[in-house]
Length: 94
Image 1 (tube, rainbow, N blue to C red):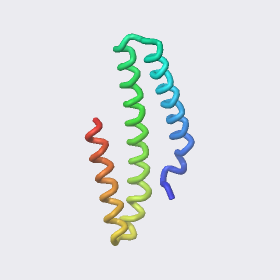
Image 2: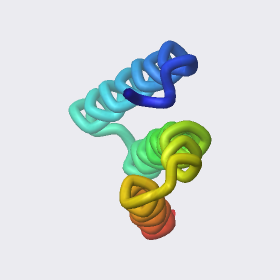
Image 3: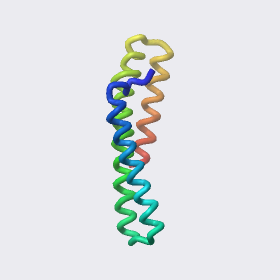
Image 4: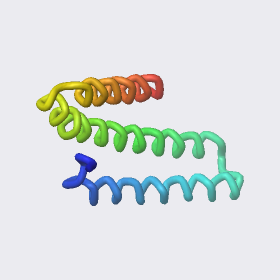
């Protein structure tokens, strides 16, 4: 089970908005819009995706990782490693 359940609708709304932004970028390239304007929109989408990633990570830590840590054992170790690896991927993107 995913721990972002209560925030699922908000996440989906954000992702739909991002889809629209990406479609807008596609159209900008098709229309040969000024490169800097396209780059500005790409930066906005990148930032929006990072915000979604951070929200998902926060939900994962508060839900899955906390639950696994309470139970202990190998599952807790696995969840901690998953979270650590996810944070490392996010840091590389920043």
